Image 1: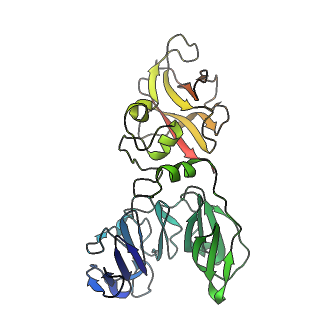
Image 2: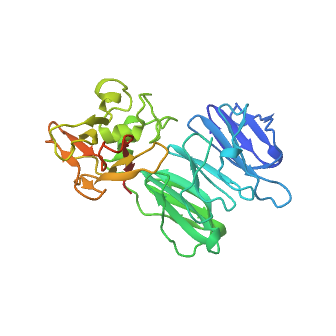
Image 3: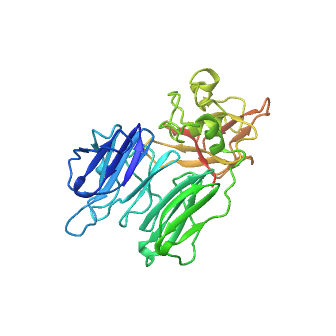
Length: 358
C-alpha cells in the first residue's frame, strides 16, 4: 500500500517494510517499523498515517498490526486498540471525510475517530470490506460477508458509524471504491466496474453545516471533535445552534443545558429539571433525547424525545413532565422534569443526548 500526506509518500509491504519518500517518489528511505509482520495497507488523514497488517506465518491471518505516525519516521504501535481477536486482522484502511475505515480477515467493518488509536464496529456479521468511499454526506463500503458464504455486501451510512445493507445481487467481488462526479464507482474481479446513480448533496442538515464550518476536514472536525475547545462536541454545537469555532458567550458553555429546580410549575415541582435553550423548530435531521440515571456509571433511561422538527414526546410513563415555552427569535426554552421526585431519590442525573437521524 502507498499513501501521501504532509509532503511525504509512505509505502508499506511484507516483513514490516516501511519506506518513505520526500521527493515525489524518486528516492525512498527504509524506516524502522519494529515488526516483521506483513503490512497490507496504509492511509493518511487528519494529519496521521495509519498502517495496518497481519501475521506472516504460519497462516498469514490474524495478529493484526496497527501503526500510526505524523511524519512517517516515528511510528507508534496502536495494535491493542484494533478491537479484533487474535485470529482476526485488518488489511484495508482508508480515510473518509473525518474518520478512518478499516476491515480485514473476519474483522467486520470498523471505524476510528481518534486517528487510529482505536477502532470500533457496530456491525454484527464478520464482513470483510475491500472498498471505502465518501461523498455528498454518504459513506459507502463494499466487500463480502464471511458469515454468509462470502455474499456480496454494499453498505451505506449517513454518519460513518451506523450502516445499512443494500443487499446487492450476486456480483463479481469488488476490491476498490471511489466517489467521482456525484457517484460511487467500484472495481473488482473479471474487470468489473460498476457505477451508482447520482448522489445529490443535501441542501441542509449536519453534514452541510460541517462542510460550511470545516471545509478542510481537519482532525478536530468530526462530530465528536471539539474544534474550539469549549467542552462542546461539534454535533452538540450544531444541535444547540452555536458556533463550533467560538468558545465564549452565547457560543460557549453558557448555552449548554442546565439542571434547575423549578417552582410554580405543578408538573416540575420537587423534581430535578433539565432546561434546554434550543433552536426552533429544531434541526430536521437530529434526534434529541433527554435521559436520566441514578449514577453516572449506571444505565440511562429516556425521559423525553424529539425527532427532527416534531414535537417532544414523553417516554418515561405516567404524566408528562415536559414544558415547552413560547418560541421567540428562532429559539425556544424547553424544560424536562425527572420521572422521580427529589424526595427519596437524593442522587439523580439528567443529560441531553443528540444523534443524526438516519
